[in-house]
Image 1 (cartoon, rainbow, N blue to C red):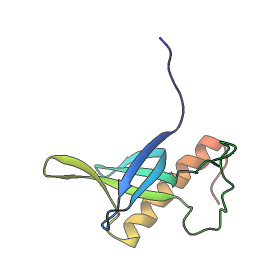
Image 2: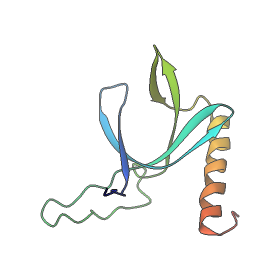
Image 3: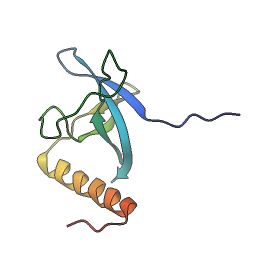
Image 4: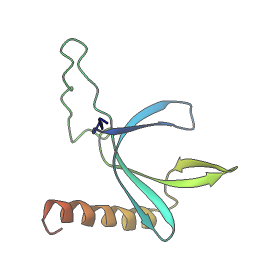
Length: 106
């Protein structure tokens, strides 16, 4: 049996009906809530098929953190409720990322 390993992509729709494709980086559970860390999917160059250059300073490109909520019996992704919740979860993800790299967070 062959297993395919590669990025997981999630498409989310904002309140205006716009779809965005995000690449799942990691998940974690905190106080009974599952959080997802994602980056915007990198588009491929139509001519070469290679990933387009990404400007890391572009405000459209950066870590996106969402949480799983249940609404009408269906699991949905939602933005976080407060800056404090975002800061806490962001720090938890950063600790995990640096532990995996063998580095200590600053």
